[in-house]
Length: 163
Picture 1 (cartoon, one colour):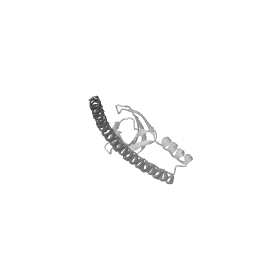
Picture 2 (cartoon, one colour):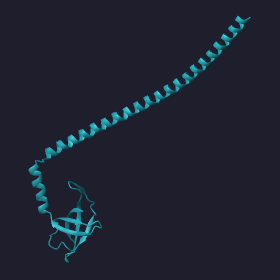
Picture 3 (cartoon, one colour):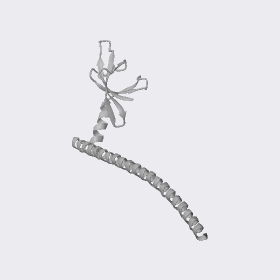
């Protein structure tokens, strides 16, 4: 893990601490560190009080490497200047990202509304289907009664004709 730190000399015996200022989260993302986040270090004798350094830490938070921040910082500045990243550009990008986020939120709300509408329509269709099934059973029952009555009439007509 890469960290930006400030050298703090604690006494005349060159005992030093590194106060972690920020931690790298990804290639272009950094997070401000807790003010009390410090590391004891004997490797800082070449740096002065208040010097900024880059510290590479292991997963166990052991110091693997300490380097001067100058080259890293100059690289960042030259990259920003070459690519034209200015405060105005960053502001516009921030505004664009906010508009995009708002559009996504509106689209998400619209999709949620549509899902609710579809669910309500599905429930209506299920209710209509149940109603149709009940009505079909009633019609089949009435048709069966009609056939029975018709057969009964035919039988009675036959009886009357035979008399």
